[in-house]
Image (tube, rainbow, N blue to C red; front, side):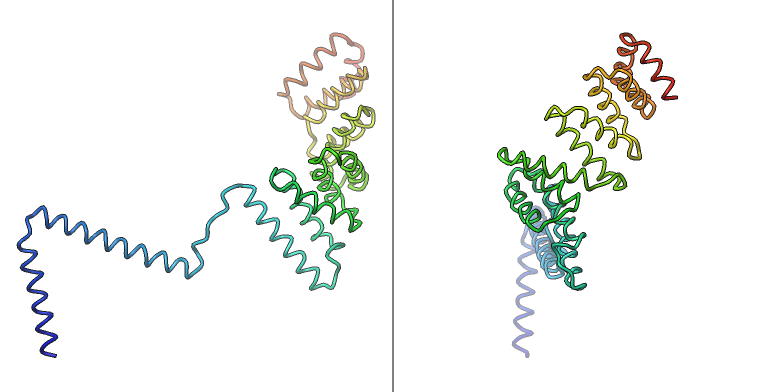
Length: 264
């Protein structure tokens, strides 16, 4: 016991004598080193504590990764709920739609498009008729030039099945199908679906304008004028629609006046 105290005293005296021998600059330098060492030790302890508590988790670096993590979690939750309820996950709507959302995300990301097509194959083979699933699979197949016809067929089925009460989903599917029809030069049918998409609340000025341009390309002057006026009614600052209507009014004044009587 006495030996221990003697050693501690001797060490303390040594340090004290050593410190007294330092110049002011050396003392500042030693103090800085002590502060740095203390800070390092505190940081190490904090990091260890965060890792142990699970709070130190790297965040996804892109919006795609964040959205994918969320979509995959929703899919896992839906699968678990289906099992709890004794239902087939391939026929359980929340699970099917969750998988469809994953496919849509993958189809937008070049490195994941093959995965999107494989997942789409699984959904289609399950016999799903869910509009969101059909739309997602069509978007996945669009990424392969050899499967464009399949994509168009699925999009047509989605447009047929969705109905007008699905809000934004109906608008998205109708507008996508209309664009597909335009690319296939089926302009009259495309106008039908553009009109359906534009009328869904809240009405879309952009889609009414697009409808007008397609109708005008077919010399359907009155219908085009009506579409332009609806676009202006929902967006008075739509300069493209205003310019298109003014031009039509100049070359087809009677039809433009009739359209103005229709849209008041």
